[in-house]
Image (cartoon, rainbow over all chains, first blue to last red; front, side):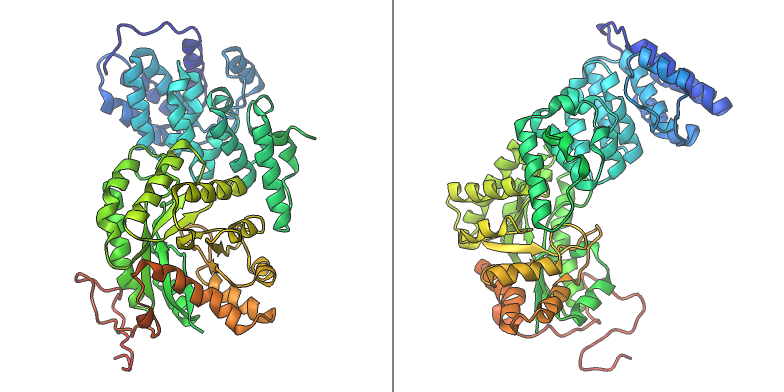
Length: 237
Length: 298
């Protein structure tokens, strides 16, 4: 794998990556420890891109897809390293893949990392894509992944939509209004609870209020119910 | 009464759907190109998709006595995909002149991004250049605004409104579309968009002029028999046969015949089924006795 001599110093990256590795080894026993060895090898000096993508894709077979379900102690440690949103719904495969991305981000130049993430996303299945959109805000310069975040919102695969829209700080922090508003409308449209959108209250605008109001009016004209939590988008309770 | 489904994605449906549709009276349909549920990452996949709509799918339909036409375009959703968008636009001229292409579509808005604006406009210009009508998809989200913006862009470009079919209307967008000279489609869906009872209410209120109904059936939860089911409810509600026929036959025929690609006289008769025919060496049969109309199956 190519390495950058100009990698930027990361203050928050290493603790998150270390904690993620600890969470994995606590859960997976011997197979998880072997996976961790391979993960470090695949992101360490020497291996090429194929070694990384093989490790990234193969994570689900090695770690399984069971839920992370962190203990109270683990939640407070996650919060201490900056993961302040709920990650209880992450699968172990997603946690493993997020760890791989964090490890790769420590070693790759910005452009190379973006290429790698884009390739993993483009060729990824839904679970692989979920892992990427969940990890994006933890990688340095998260704004470079905006296109991927917006693309994930366009999916018809509900778990992938929820991975970007729900319990994820990325959209509120980096989406332009147009994309953020469309994401909120889509959540209303497919019945995803708005309280799951991190930072929504801070992104309510007159335009989002108008869109949500129009949606309520359209529902009433069709003789249908209006989602009870729509006030979170209109800002009017 | 012969029925016309002016918007249905048959590549996602089975031969049993074709049989049921033919039995319910559907004699002709239009299959608009759209997206396939997951993003395409290469322009080449559109070439194969278009070829399928123009060849194999038309053949499949014919094997069940249904005439198949299509509309081709870069769909609104994938207009946002820089990996394919311009490449598909570059392909379109050589496909829009093929037989049985009855409009440019579905075009329009999904998220109402600058990219969608651009490619909606580009494809209206393409339709002008190739003398074709357009089928305009209206968005699921922010539909009223999306419809307004579609009508405004059509006006701005000077595209003739009588050659525009605005689709997926509801109670709030239909009156707005009828103020123009555009035609108004309605997608009858099991849960979203429009249902049969609401459609009957709209026809009672607004009449039949320039109004169409379709199933928009695709790979999602949808029902390829929604046109005949809507007809049944219209009858039950006491709508005149002439009104019903205007909506489910005369209007789609009148709209799409503006392409010059709809053989109106040929449509009068259902195509005879001959399942001994092959398409490029392939049959839809899997060992069954071929049905040939006028003959008892062997």
